[in-house]
Image 1 (tube, one colour):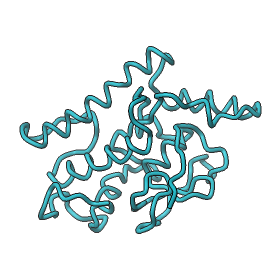
Image 2: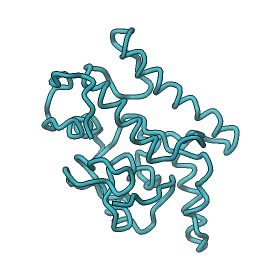
Image 3: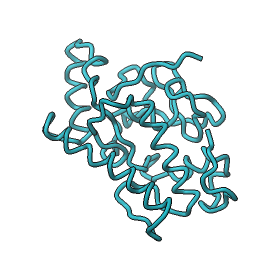
Image 4: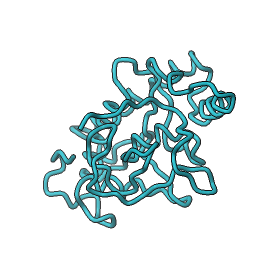
Length: 208
């Protein structure tokens, strides 16, 4: 399957409910059309394409809790899908080690792989400083507001968020006001949604 292009923005054609958020669906086992990995729990449909949460939320910056879910960063050396694949694996490994996946947290037991994974997240997170210098804000909602106005004026917004602008997943995703991201990561690991984070016999086993 040829993967589709992905840049952060507001997909005005995405299916929406009354709150204006892209609808999250259970399409576990289906392949994301943007990164090529399994969509997992709470997958999304973006312009008739199936998307995992990370690829979907990057194109749904109008979501109510978007500033809790992603932060804008400047990372021209890596595409948005590549960033999503990297962060997804970091979160899988952190959860398997029994750690929080939220980007602002610190390891409960510093050292070894735990510290390496959190350091990788911190380096990515700190790329938001460059976005603040370029755009004046790293808040995804600010970009969403600007893109929505341009779209209402019939400006093609799909090419405006190119270059090095990326949506960095924070390790949170909200459905009905509740953070369900741990359940999503568990589904990527092939575990039941209510499984404990430490159930994997091999903490660093790669899971698509």
